[in-house]
Length: 464
Image (cartoon, rainbow, N blue to C red; front, side):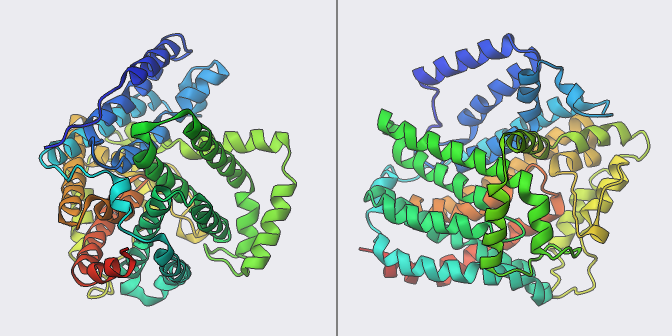
């Protein structure tokens, strides 16, 4: 049984500084709660000898809850004033933070009961040859967009194909750790840079996933022996991510309109060269005022407690609690795969949002899907305090899957690599229950198929 991360002396200093900032901020109570929560996550879900990906997943969700509190402090206003016409913002905020803590407790209850080998990731990574990984990774990278984009053509096979494509991250992670351990930074930078650039040519850019996975890898390699020379590249990576998110948020509406040719679809009709040309044109026009506008848009996009606030006001006043119906529907859907039940109803997140929040949001008619988020759906099902119990069980489920993958993989590096698709699945605060459970089951099925029939052969190909 391995221990969880301890808050070091430097961590205590950072916490003290943050608490001083919180107490003296414009929103002292909300900011204090926001500051303390990540340290609770650290103690609950990041094991001493393992990866930080569950911690990072909760941290990204925490940002969706708290970002407007920090923005309100910057503007010197009450954070509830940043939410137009929402009367229950403070309830939504505190319920969300408490809900995330209950998820962390649920995960902790499971993963504290096992241990992995003590070998560090650098040592394990030296068993794999990055030069052998390059051609394999290029093949996987070329197949990934094809599999992902055309999975929708295959009806009932769409989800299995898209989840299989997500295991590209396994190869990416092993390649990354191999390069980091052998100090082949230029090789990794070249491949990762190309991937990030190519990700910008699609309707849905996933460049942030690369940054988050890279941060997870860097934490494994350098965090135990962090030196001053490591701080600059880590900070540069963070600044690059923030800048790209702001720019992307600003240019996204016009860029997507170009990609789909003005049609009401979420697909692109442009070639990569056309997409790059338009992207360069839009980026070259950005000035200081656009960056400020993009920053505001980013804050509004990342924040995701508006719908929860509206739902608290609407349920049960206008629509009663559903007493587990949303959980039941999500579990029932995974028992009826579309391959065998082709007439199964399609998921319409926007309709669910309209029904339980009273908000008139865009939907399928605009090629848009707007979900309430799984925390809000737990509130609809069970109310307060029942939602905290169901969120604890939600955490238990994540913990069971995480523990199984880590303990059934050949070693903890491979286990961590196989966890990346799970990380991509769970880090979004806006995920709906029905999509989460379906994605989780398919992830497990694909993992088992790879582990039993392909993993050993793959590792033999890349071992030194």
